[in-house]
Image 1: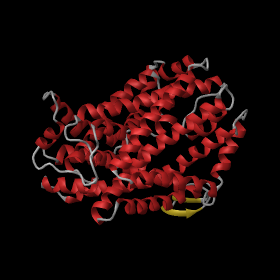
Image 2 (image 1 turned 30 degrees about the vertical axis):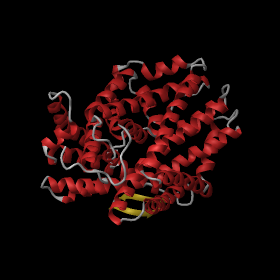
Image 3 (image 1 turned 180 degrees about the vertical axis):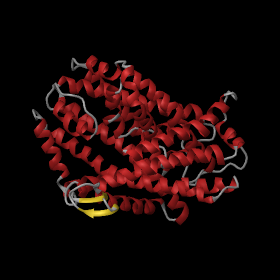
Length: 467
């Protein structure tokens, strides 16, 4: 390609580093506490097939668009869209989409850090044997005691933000690349260790049947869930994948790389289910999803069965690594942008962005205790009120940030990114960046990007807003 740009932040050593980075961004808490249960509840193997179709038709085209734009622009997402819009003769206001994504990533990181702090706390609690022989009431009370303690939550929140900022501050090669080469293989190893342990519980096939039973009757009610998770699980819509694409080597194949990331993300989610649900069934418990699965059901299970303490520690270390790898992807777009704009050093910019996330994260910390009665987005007969100090109705600060980011910013950002790639960026530029070995595939990929992916995201957007 002519006029090749080089990122001032660095370049990955190979496409496999990008795969590790993108997979680390995609593999998060949702892979562990959400997708496995969704598969079991919405038709097992039938749901997995529908989900894979949604990944192929919606998730991967958005990820492809972000990666392609990032590699073409070789800058932060904001400056990438600004420069590519200028080259395409379009308005530079397209960069606002990336600005919105950058803000969304910081807001998500602010509460993600608090939730990841819970996992850090549970590593120590599990190692001390706090869950040995515990029952449902005890596990629930233990989790409630954690969330009710603002000082304890702030301590773990601070530690997790420091860990995240440390990696980002060291730079793309010395920080991101070096850490991902350790964290992601370690995550896969721990997952395999847990899977091996689940084989010894005597309930492995029960967990497999829960995940992969083939029930077409339940699929219709799970289609929207499959579409939504296929979009959200890949960490698209906030610019993380775009900034990682800016560090991607020119010779790396975009198509095969993105497919590999999608497959790895799905394999991790399914393996997590096969590793965890046999443990739940071995303890005589019912499967669940969300924080209840991770911080109540699983601690009871690990505290009940043989060698549960050891493998409970392994599990929460796995959770912390998954959260850590996702967190660094959320901080990088803002750091890259402000380094480019201000000319300040990366460590200084990283510290500033981390402090911003830490301060906003205190709102999430206090949402569970000191400010539990503060409510936003309260409605009454007079219409919407942005804020009302009341214990009835509305959303806590944490719930409000989660609502704004997951239901508005993320789908809107993903929609704008695919529209820009499919309708604003020159078709031949897109073709040249994609560089498919089989030319006949290009019209198919381009059609998915221009029509099907935007339509799917619109459905997700409308569905999320209606909840």
